[in-house]
Image 1 (cartoon, rainbow, N blue to C red):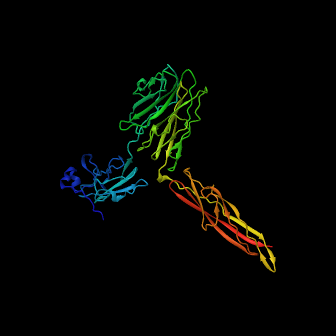
Image 2: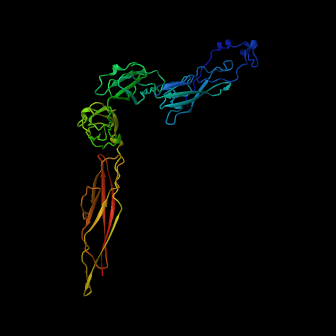
Image 3: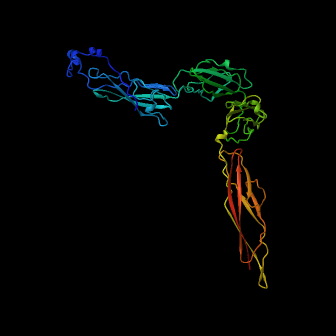
Length: 457
C-alpha cells in the first residue's frame, strides 16, 4: 500500500480564526465571519500545456482544509483519462511511484490530453474532486511557404509575386527569403527582386521566357521547405513547353539507373529544342547530383540514384530564344524494409488424357506408345505490387518434362511418349513449380499436370 502523505498544522494556526471557532462554536462567527468549514476543498492547480518529453508537475498546495477541527490532510491523485496509446497510470506519479504526494510529477509518453483528479481528506471528511488537464504537444512544426502562381507577364513590365498564403502552424510571425532565376536570355538575379524581405516582391523581367521564383519562410526557429513558382514572360515568339514525363513511386528494386523521357516536350512554332535536366533535391545522405544524368542535355537520359527517398528532377527546354517553364517530377524510391515480394501464380492445373488404338493377335493385345504431348505453362498472372521487374523459373519435380524456356512467364513443356496398355489408364502426375523473384524476395506456386495414357480397341 502506498504511504499516505499528510500536512500537520501547528496549534498556533488556531489564532488565525475567530475565537468562537477555536472554542468549538460551529454555527456562526461574529463580524460577518463565515461558518466553521465542514469539509476540505481540493485544488488540483492550473491546466498545463507541455512539449512531449517534458515532465508534468502537479500542484495541490492551494487545497484547503478545516484546521480548527483537524491537524492532518491526505492527498489522492488519479488519472481520469489518458491518450489511447499511453501506458501512463497512477503508478507513474512521482519518483517514489505514489499518488498521495502534494506535488507529484509524471512524464507523458504520447501526445494528447491527460486528465487527472485530486481528492483531499481530513477528519471532517472527503472533498469533491478537482480536475486538471495536462495537454501534451509534439513541438514546433515547420512553417509553410506559398508563393502563389503561376504568373504571366510581359518583358519590361513589373510583375508582382504574392507570398501572403504562407503561414506557420503555431501562428508565429514569418521572415521571408526570396530568390530569382531567369532564362538564358536574362541578366537578372535575386537582387532584382524589390521588397525582398516582404511577402509581395516585384521584379521587371528583361526578356521573354520562364522566370523561376523561390520562397522560403522562417518562424524564427526553422526554415520551411522551398516553394517554387514560375512567371511566363511574353517575348518575341512562343515559349516552348517542357515535359519530363510522370512522377512515380518506385519499389526498392527499381531500375538503376532510371530511364527518363522528355520527348513529349515541344515548341509551338516547331523550332528545334535543346534540353536541360537538373536535380532540385535528393534524399538525405544521397550523393546524386546533376552529374548523375548520363547526358543532362539529352531528351532521354538515364539517372543514377543511390539511397531510398524522393528525387525531385526538373527539365527545361529552349528553342534558342526562350526557355520553357521547368517541368518537375518526383521519383520516390522505397527502402528494402518496404519491399513487397512478388506473388507467383503458376496457373490452373492441366488434365491430359491420351488414348491409342491397340491390335490383338492370338488374344494378345499390342499397343503403340502414347505420343509426346505439348502443354502450355502460363505464369502471366504473377505480379509485383511495387511494379518491380520479375524473374521467372519453372521446374518439374521428376525432371521428366522438357521445358522449352524455364525463365519465361509463359512457356511450353513436352511430356515424353509413354507406354500404353490395353484397357488400362496409366496415370502420371507432374508437379510443376514456378518461382517468381524481384531483387530481394522469392515466392513460389505449383500446379499439377494430370496425365493419362490408355490403349483401346
